[in-house]
Image 1 (cartoon, rainbow, N blue to C red):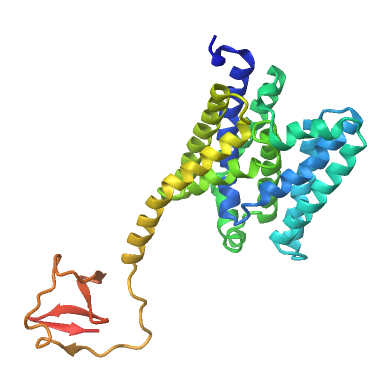
Image 2: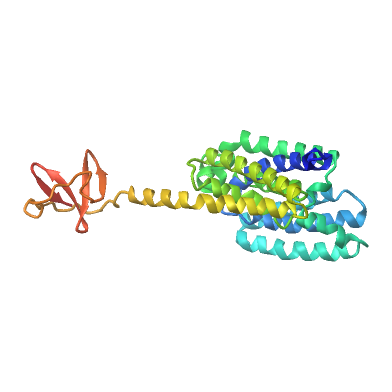
Length: 331
């Protein structure tokens, strides 16, 4: 019997698809805000939530969501208040969250062993109820991310500009933090709290190698995340005794490595098309007709061509030359 006919494998594949789509959606905003490690910070503080759930006998997922949201909002408040930079706030959650989680879990009897399922993922143990909760939360995150894309992008790209246009920057910043917290807790059973940030960030970084525009990057990242998540679970089921979460992350990394040469080529071409910086002072033009008596600039001359107004300049001997009434001007 094929492994894919087993009910728990089918549930795992469905959960992987949902998580793979949702995680890069929020990750796109985090990457744009240069807070790629926020998922890790929230993941560590969510450990405390899971441990509290195990200690009190409540739903670890529900408690983790509450604690993660509080932690994410704390990061945003600290960052906005200027009391500490974003990376310092994340570091505080990194260390405090994991330490508090381990201490609380140690008081929950077998809590430390149970905590492993959430730290490294346990997608093959999902129930139908778990899948429904995951789908609902992921749908909310995706809907908000897409419907409020213009506002959330403005806040993520340039807070000062967004503020001048009347956008409530703090409100939308807090919304991004809350969505990140929900996404982390949704994905913790898929890839684990210690690896969830990879599924949020790496597909987006991969998409950036060959896409233009924020919306296109988001959609491509969602597709890459979904493909990596489903493929990771499928390979884990076929090979056996391989953690699905780790396999998903490795596939994400493989996709990034494969896309990197494309990004390098695009960056080089973009630099080659950059125009020269304009000079503040007017420059004197020189007649270089004698210097170019035996040379004709053109598409095959080997010199860099730069668009300049209504004509083309050619870079030659460290200067720009342009054809002017039968001779070349240097400027």
